[in-house]
Image (cartoon, rainbow, N blue to C red; front, side, top):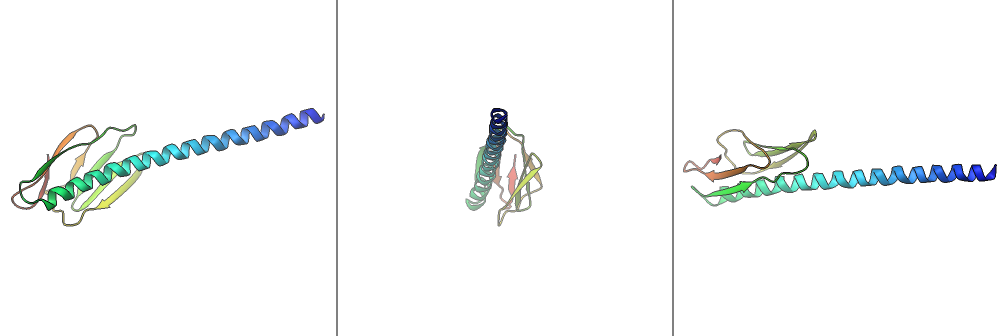
Length: 123
């Protein structure tokens, strides 16, 4: 009887450790994904700010990386937003005057330029 009770306790502890380790792994993978998407958002915001600060007719090429999760970047007025897995991250880009609302998708190459009117254009 004592042997069965000890075996039962060992199984409960082992199951608890398995659940805990699985939750820890899922949490770390989720944090890595959030961090990677935040880096993409920061990189695009930096590139747009660089084009804005370098004057008229300055342009830069930007290739958005592909990740394991699909995402969409949206530039609307002076706010850059990334959306993925029902999550949303935003970054305010001061002094940006965009022609319209732009959507950018992973794996594509974009040209970001400042026109003679001082507006940001993404092609």
